[in-house]
Structures are given as structure tokens and as C-alpha cells.
Length: 439
Image 1 (cartoon, rainbow, N blue to C red):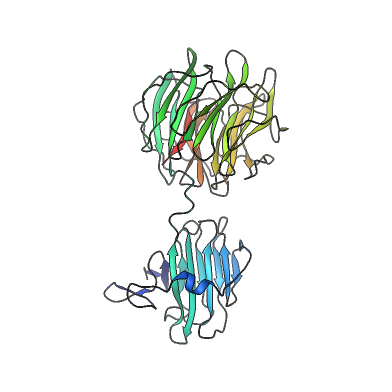
Image 2 (image 1 turned 180 degrees about the vertical axis):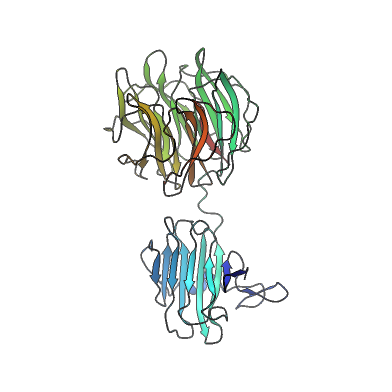
């Protein structure tokens, strides 16, 4: 029990089972400090289809995966119950901390409290089993445990780095916390440049690569799992500006496409120790200023850009072993100077950019099968040359860019791919930075 909400007591599930005694100790149905094992009660449960709605009515003996990606879910318990009736609710998409579940005990007691009390659970990854004991205690949680070791994918923090400010190229960087808060400038490390790309590698680290500052560059800069940028690593592969980059195979990365004086489709793989390999002959339409992001948990996609004559929306899928596939017909508005990142653990989003009509703010979602959706009306300031990265495991953030003047504004992306309104910029306003996640 953690406090009064209006006239109702709020019982939150976020740790050990049971309610608190007057001395603050946990009292459970299996004795102090113990709970009934999940596997002891799950065997006789009939599991139902995933629940995505904002309300549902539970039936005793059933288990319900509850997906709160889009909304809170209020669960109404049976109006009558017999001793031993059991229900299980599981956080299907690990979103209960964002959108909780609320339990309406429907006239029966819950942990000895009557139905005037609010019962809610708001811990990601929770599996909650409740059993009806008697009229006095009513429903009692017999298991209230969060799964902390799965899924492991999805880095918690991000970094924006490099770019071109109002007067010159810069190497400044800005860290992104696990709740999407951008920090003030960190003094730049390595060669100042813009029009570069970045991707995560090794599961928890990142790499900035390529770009331009007077000449085309091919050097890279590794990012530790604490967000520290390292000094330049000598160039491998064709020096170029405005490539795209993404991870693949869980722990490796790929740089691809770009401009060397003319558009190219060459790619360079990044090992799980951050070593960049020599050029791989390009596949698909040679173009500059595409973007790339992960999808499906272990694959990637390059999309959009400018070929030798026009804007394009063509895409190229990247397998989980880093093989780039031939062109897929473009979906959505052809454009370049965009940004992209993953969200929801296994999906992606392309956003913002520019074409002959000027700066844009629309987005295009990428499914966990690598299918690009049609345009979604833009939210936030239309701009070109922003960057984007994952944060918080399953969310994303677009930041910086050129609106006609340089900006540091950011836009958060929910774990359902919804872009939020502008957040006031932090750090040096600039265009052409890159961004990636780390852990």
C-alpha cells in the first residue's frame, strides 16, 4: 500500500507479494517473506488470447496476457468466486510501467480490503497470480514477480554526436538518458565533421563513422557502453559523407551508401568488437543521404535518399548476417536528409527530411517484418538533417536538424511508434549529426 488517491487506497504491485504490516514487513499467503511458486499454480490455467483493450472481464481459471502498449487496462474480476479460484495476468509487452493495469474486484474483497480501494499494478514484466481465499480476505496475490532477465534487447541510453553548427563542423556530443532526457554538451573527441552515420555494435556500444569536413572522411570513433567517445580510428573503406548505418545480427553493424563525389551503394560491415571491414560491392540503387534502422530484432533496412537525379523512397533489407538485398519499391514520400531509429524492440521508424518541396515532418513506420508503411502526418517542427536513436530499451528520439535555421529541438517516439510534440532543445543547435544507442 503506497498512499491515498482521492478517497481510495492505492495498492501497487511492484515487488514482493502481499500487503505491508504495521512494521513494514511483507506478509504473504505462504508466510513472511515467501510466496507460492508460479509454476505450482500455472499448470491448470487456460491461457487466453492477448488482451489489448482498455477494459476486460476475467473468468476464473484463465490466464491473460495483457498488452498495454496503447492504453491502460481495467480488469473486472468475477462477481462471485469460490475458494481456490485462480487468475493469472502477465505483462505481454513489458509496458505496465507506462500503462498500468487496474483491478476492479467487483464487490469482493482484495487482500482484505473492500471494493472502494483502487488496486493497480505498474511494473514492467510482471506476472500476477491471484487466488480467492474466502469472504474476509477475498482475492490474494500468490505471485507478484517481474521478469528482469527478458527481453535483453534494447539499449537504455543514446548519444547524439558531431554535426555542423552555425559556423563550422563540430565534434560535440549529447547523451540521452533512459527516460529520453538530453544532456548538455560534452566536449568533442575526434575529427569534427558532419554528414556522418552511427550504429550500435557489440550489443551495448556504438560507433560513429564517415562524414565530411572539407574532404570526405572514412575514420570512425567508438562509443563505450558508458557513452564515452574515443579518438579517431583510421579509415577503412571508401571515404564518403551521408551514408546510413544500422545494426544487424544482434551485435554487429553496417554502414552503407553515401556520396563520394557521386552516389554509391558500397557497404562496410562492423564486427561485434567494433572493427570496420573493407568495402562490399554495393547492392541496389546508389544514393546519398539514405537512412537505416533495425527491425525484427536482428535485421536492418536502408531507405530513401537521393540518387543521381531524383529523390527516392526505395528500400533495401539487411539480413541477420549483414547481406543487403535488392531494391524494394518505395513507400511514402520520396525524400532525403532524414533520420531513423528502432522502437518497440523490433520495429523501426523513418522521419522528417526534405525534398524539392522543402522541409518535412512526416514519418513512416517499419514493421517487424521490414515492411514500410505509408506516410503518417508529421508531429513537431519540419526539418532536414536531424538524427535519431533508440533509448529506454524500446523507445526512440529524433533530435537537432535544420528548419531554415539550426535547431536542437527533439521529439520522443513511444514504444508504439507515436511521435510526440517538440521538446525544447538542449545543447548546440546543429545539422547533420549522427546518433546511436548504448547500454
